Amino acid sequence: MKIKNLKLKIVFLGTSEFAIPTLKTLLLSDNQPILVITSEDKPAGRGRKLASSPVKALALANNLAILEPSKIDRDFIEKTKVLGPDIGVLAAYGKILPKAFIEAFPLGILNIHPSLLPKYRGPSPIQAAILNGDKKTGVTIILIDEKMDHGPILAERAINIDNPDYLELHNQLAELGIKVLLEVLPEWIQGNIKPRSQNESEATYSKLIKKEDGQIDWSRPAEEIERMVRAYNPWPGAYTKIKNGEILKIKKVKVENGVLKILIVQPESKKEMPWDAFLRGHPEFLK
Amino acid sequence: MILQKENKVLRQNAKPVADPKNTDIKNLIEKMAEVMFAEPDGIGIAAPQIGKSLRIFLVAKEAAVRNADELREKIGDENKKRNIDYLVFINPVVKNFASKKMKDVEGCLSVRGLYGEVSRAEKITIEYLDESGKKRQRGASGLFARVIQHELDHLDGVLFIDKAKNLKKISNSQFPISNEN
Image (cartoon, rainbow over all chains, first blue to last red; front, side, top):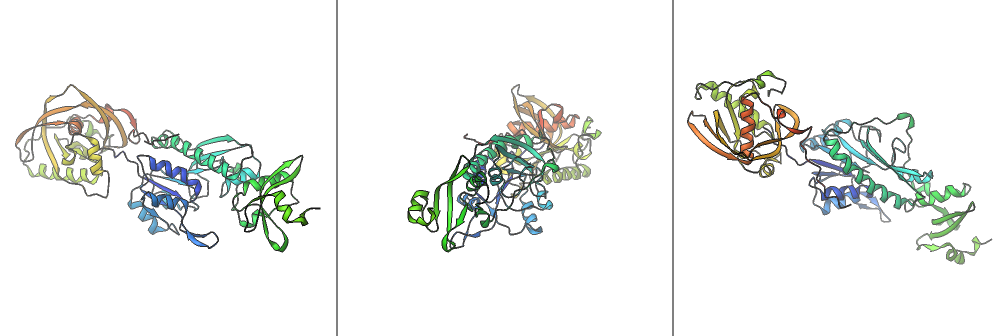
């Protein structure tokens, strides 16, 4: 006779803020991750000091084992195998995983992706939904394979959206992601879900957003600029250059009768202020 | 090495052991122990499972506990070294068992990947020969009683999947999360 060790050995892979609700929920469970894999510390902020990822900080605070491979090579794969993991859970990790690593997980690695795949594969699905003015988006749970956001779908959940800000939608999808994952996990483990392939012909990709993407092209339609302001807040932030090349961040705008109205701005090294207040100090903007 | 459920030997009525002190039997017992402890979760094994249709089974001593959780604590961590002591039961005969039943999840070395709930008598008393051929009697309860009944079934050609409810690819372990939402 065999006794089943009821504890599932979960490895958690994640880096950014989006992964936090998922890790927090796993921490509340009887199946605390046996290992957290996260990206190595990166320079961040003004001083470009090395900063830990949000996931690393949370894992440290909970005394979880952490590994921060710069590369998932053969050594690292062996190290993971020794732990005998059952399943991986991945949210916003930021690296493509080699096949040999994925195969170390008998039940696979489940990924929470904040879009309705195959739409918006890639690194900025939440921003893409806002930039495109979508009325519907959602989360998809896929089984990771060695191609980016390409693996078969286990579950998908759509929500209607109404011009959300980035953070608002980010938080909403992160919460929805863990909710759907919790429904999917036990069913998947018990073999009750048949993965279904993504329809390649419908695949679209979101891009890696760079700081320069935030610069507003004022020749674009008002609606487009308004979406950009929402999608890029807080990072990289929609901005325009004013005299002396100084950057003025455009924090909040609205479109009225097809005309863009600026509401809140943030001049370089200053606090946010209403557009009116900024204008009083910069009469050159008044025609 | 371990016969799987399709194998006919597992369905035979195993024969009594004539001479427990025979070297072949001694070697067989050692082989059975080796196979059982090679499995991280193996706590009992019967001779038919390694192809010998004889009335012998072993129980890992660490499984001689009432409570399955107590054992999971012990063997849950695969990196921990297991205590490789075991008890040998030759030509076992049931002397008595409790009418009270209990349900729990079982798996089997001969049924890879499947787990299911089996109802078993809470207590059992058996008479058997130990490895030195000495006649013994032993009462068991809880998990220990369960393993004994599971192994006794093997000697009669019965597998736990014949009796189990809710057979699942992995044990019916709900994914236990205290989701506050």
